[in-house]
Image (cartoon, rainbow, N blue to C red; front, side, top):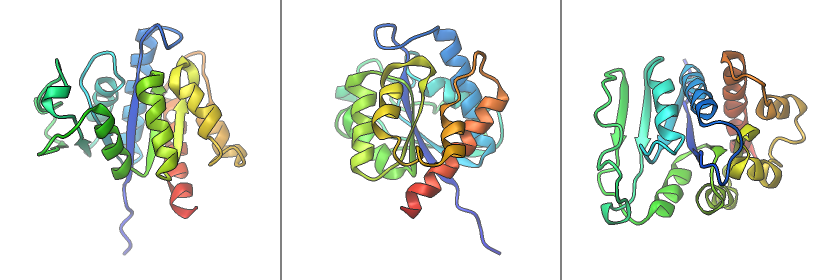
Length: 207
């Protein structure tokens, strides 16, 4: 019997008014719904931070509230991560979620982004700044990782769609899954997007 390999998804992004559109509460809701849908799609997560401005804690919450899964944490050297938890998500009371901490944090957040991209099959952006998220999307493209972006909140994710969506623009069904911009985020949107992410990862592996 063939065992299906789990898709490794690096999620990056944040909500800051100077870069993003809409409401922070809606951003958090979308992240939680997407985290849950990625769990149900048998994806493993790669995250970096517990800072409340980032997508990571809300993605993690949705992911951990569903079924079992794996979360890999890459983080910078403590001297470059003032105010960050030393072991992000290590205190989460979710025994069915396996959180693997990087035993040797190194470099800056840019280093963490590169390590996360290298360990992933696909990169998903939501919101995000030009300095952090958009730079990471450019690195993902150079390293041959397909990129998907939740465009509803503008920011780096929307720019990333314009710059790095060549993997799926020619596939009408996949493009529809990954560019849906609902008035209200719901389970149908999240499961459709997660389905698109898994399909995009396979396209990237086959290209």
